[in-house]
Length: 487
Image (tube, rainbow, N blue to C red; front, side, top):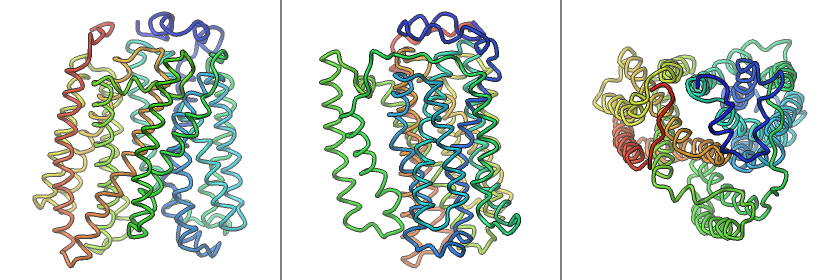
């Protein structure tokens, strides 16, 4: 069926979810999708928009190095920690309600960020902003899975991929433009204040066009699961974000080590709740499905490669080649532009093309990294190879997303959304931490920046090949892969 769902996964979902397409809102899928993707766009833009504003913030608020680090990472930490919890909360309280609450929190905290009188106030507002972003972004993929089917779902997932790609580059570019414009002497503040009118418009559109709340009110939020998962993610993500800049002190390694038993305890508690027919925060049994676990690990690896490239490329161009910040900000557009194009194109492709997209995409990324490592580092070659890498990442991202959404039952839509979004955040953070450290250590030991850049890209190429192999095994391990309507 090539329209909004009236059967299929809706029928497989609990009864409380079957009425979500009735009424006026169900008749406007385009506006529904635009409202959802608008919130996701804002949430992803604000991951990167503050980076270029740091010098202006430091000068205006006299912020210390630690405070500047928290202004950047406070948002990322809150965002990554609450994606799975937000997805489950949407299932229990209603996805429309949770999305709107997240959007309101995000908009109000953006206003608070823009008016922050000092750096502690800005840090606090950024954390709240990350909470709002997690609540709304965690609903987007779930609503697409539940309310779209067939070709309509594939087009929606293509748009999802495109917006995700575009938001990455717009965050950097918009931040630079607004800070440079220094509107009415406000310096960095417009990078946050611009969210307010956009957020208000999205609140009105979302209230009008999102489907009515589909709730499972008989379920309760698993408090012990929320606490353990949040603690585990905090122990994992905090050292990955702060450790590289601090020189990997002892506390960062202790946190990483401590995260493992916390995650193990979380899995044990969740399995126990499920055995008692309770309401676990996450269905950890999904991770025991080989095709799900392999796909998520593959996606974490490709995401790590993408974020590592952006970080290392900026360092190499500016510190190694002496290029300007504007130049280093424009070069990656080739990657992001081709990435944004692949999703919509793949959404209209056949079932076999979608199945092969992820492993082929991983190999294209590997080719791009390997060619750069071999010495193709002039401006022209970088643009071409980054464009190829973007095509590869777009195919790997879209193909893996299609694999997960088509091979997992609709009743697990919230679990898939939370797991996938958290994988993206942890994978990207891990990529910067590991490969950024590799590059910086090679340069610090007296290495030539070009050689360090080549070595890092060679390692990224190897990881991309491994990601392609993993997702190929995931496809082969999929039990009774459902036939897609129309193919």
